Length: 470
Ligand SMILES: Cc1ncc(COP(=O)(O)O)c(C=O)c1O
Image 1: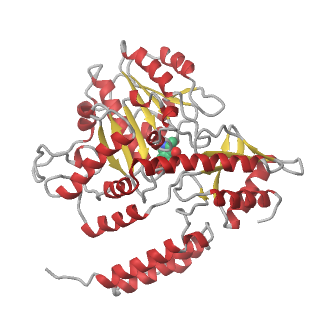
Image 2: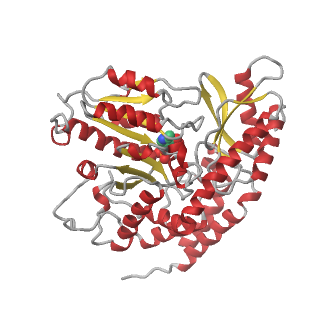
Image 3: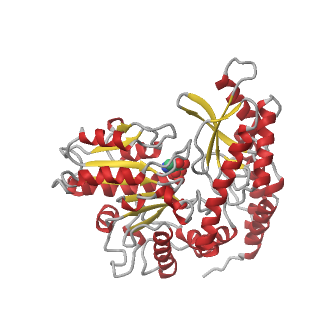
């Protein structure tokens, strides 16, 4: 076997990574240059000849750095994004070095066992039925999909239709009921599943974007046959948590006479169940049939890792398993290939294992509780700015802000302009949205590092941007 010299390239990567991570807090949150400038700098014809690996890494790191968003900065509040932590990042380096195709347990007992143990830890941490099955996928989009494949297949099997064998042509209709503020990835999953995104039944929500259980009961009573209800634990704009126990009651009442599955999209909020303080907000979640969440959001692992959890292991297994004569034959061990849509895959759970091992339950609880506290502090600071309004009930880690135009003209345009100025300042980076037809700025506090000083600097920068200064 030819043995390359590993050290120079890995040392170059190590130096570049530390240069990035150790100076993160001093740099602008936003990238210094945009896509066009990056393209100008990077685009060149496919090289004929190669270069020494260490030179490739040093040059690549230097060239890309101006275009990097400091997503793991304590004042990055865009979308819903956690910041990677030391154990997770270091574990991810090992994943690349080990280069294990983590599909089957027999050839990869090290990382496959790590994955099985991580699955057990997650069920304990999130206090979900301990016999549930778990899949580690790229993100909540795919986790929603995996859960909903199992859901579709089982509710159809319950009325005698084998969708896995016979497909959907001629199948009984399946009703999918979602909250008015369902995340778009659920709609996309429903589309991929062939259940028809535009056929989803939308259930009315309250002021904080939480599904109304009485509206769900009414909507469910209007559909016959198999049904899938998708609830949400953490709405993208408000952080609103659906009343999960009341929703589970409504679903349970229907289960007796028609196949009904309850799925919870907990991409944002489910890790709140790790905290004794926050867990009561999610009471009833354990009664669902499937759950999706993201490790790369509130657990603060490096990208990427979503998690799909299904109560009925058999349904999950049937939906995802794959066997071929050239692969090791299934044994007693848990084979990752049985639970994911992918065949070949990286040892994605390794960074989750390392993050959980380094934080412990107490550390996870501390992060989610602190982020909620920082969100409340941010909301208090915003309310003290004349002309600024917090539009949501801050029940979790999301703060939705609207700025009134001092000239009394156009609040939407003023809110969007304030967002642009704030992002351009480099001090903090929230993202924008339209909520109930009005422009708003969304602050998502999902980073382990965000502290009171970050909040103070963000509120000052927002006040300045509101006055028209970047
Ligand atoms: C509620 C919800 N579901 C699903 C997703 C999709 O997550 P991912 O980007 O990890 O696929 C998000 C992303 O923010 C979300 O907020």
